[in-house]
Image (cartoon, rainbow, N blue to C red; front, side, top):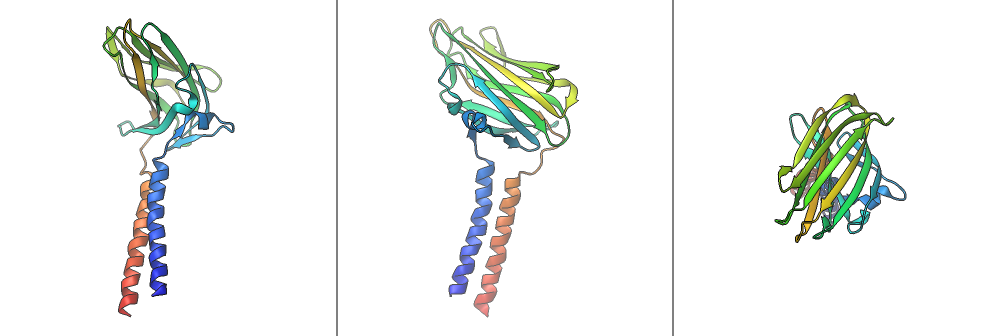
Length: 230
């Protein structure tokens, strides 16, 4: 009986370890944690994001900007990160605010050939505006391209994508977030999505680990049955 309980505990541990890996993979962090000190990196697929910097009025502070994984299945496949501030980037009526977010993207696989930008926000029915402009350069500062997504009373462009002027193993991204309040309404920007080319979207490590946990669980279960019969 004690042996059976021991193996049950081990099986449960392996099973939960699989789920724990899934939870860790789906986890989020904040810009403050990435900026440090000490500075840390954010990895999604074969893309490593580092050297984060953030400036602008608070709220939201760097600690209030959540960073999540973000993927586009393609083709072509895109993989990256999402910025989700809480409270949102905003500008009350008759005001304007500006934030700068910058970081380095390094590919541990194939070179980066293109980039995607997406935004989610609203003008509250007023005549304010949202503009997220982005420049992409080499590590040496040479221009590779630019993107722009915006919302204003006369034009709405929620996504933009470009092919870089030359493939790069690492790039520097500088994002300018400009939010202008309407004459009588609040303007808010709640999400900015960012993704970069990847030759393929691999099966998430979390799902692989979950499969290992499930396999271990059922293997132990078969063992218990044999032990009970014996």
